[in-house]
Length: 112
Length: 110
Image (cartoon, rainbow over all chains, first blue to last red):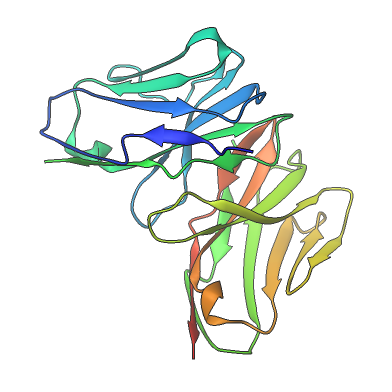
């Protein structure tokens, strides 16, 4: 089966600019997650979707981050405006029944 | 929320030796404990997992043990090979959400 697709692979932006990341989960996976992984740390959950509804966004900095999952398939994560501390790898993952996550390769964001 | 601690942060072993990584978790409701391997520039890849109703699971050279009473689980890699060099993460799941440890960088010396 095809894996979780993410784009772009790399992005460099200046602080206060906006950026968007895209994720296409494994076909049939109802649950989709966005994680933030800062260099040298474990991934931290930002938001969890079940189909096209948000299950948990308690860790999402909603003043600057937003995410949507249209039609219960693809998802986008947006940051506006970006701060230096947003530099990280943004990982998308999907699962069929809540465990056995499959991660994408991530988008490495550098804010300068 | 769940808090997962992982030790050691770095581990260097001679090829052929064993490697052990230990994790503790805080939420007794956590019921699923996967281990991920992350290579440079790639996303985490699931290598083995264990559920709360099982004490031990083995898959070829890797094994995981779980002590629910102590809220402690461990990854064991035997007969290490250079391709085992990577960052390893433990995680604990509650309510379909994973909380990760900080990671262990394993280096296998030839």
